[in-house]
Amino acid sequence: MAIPQLSPEERKAALEKAKAARIKRAEVREKLKAGALSVKQILDMKDDPIIGRMKVSTLIETLPGYGKAKSEKIMNELQIADSRRLRGLGERQLAALLERLV
Image (tube, rainbow, N blue to C red; front, side, top):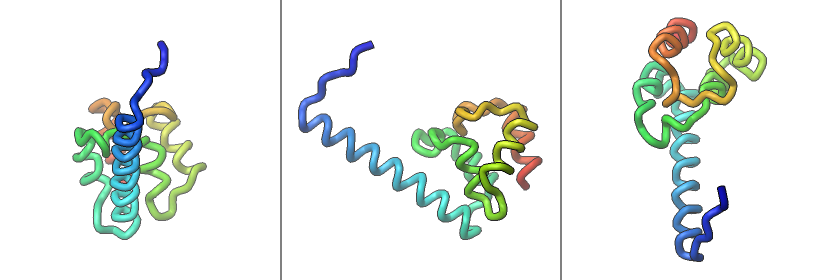
């Protein structure tokens, strides 16, 4: 598949949209770290087009006391692929993740 050729205006708009998405995901992670949001609240927002694109591993690593090693261990135990995003979690995976983290 060829990369679409964008006009300078289209490219600038796409870059701004991507920047806004990264900023929103960063704000959600900061709120999670600060305790203003819970894991359940974030998982309930998985249908949001921006939040749904956050990787599950990033969500776990954001939690206080969790790092890359614990995140990988949890993902392996729950049989969630490293590349899985919040929007792609199945009902069983979602329930297991909530049970494990809450």
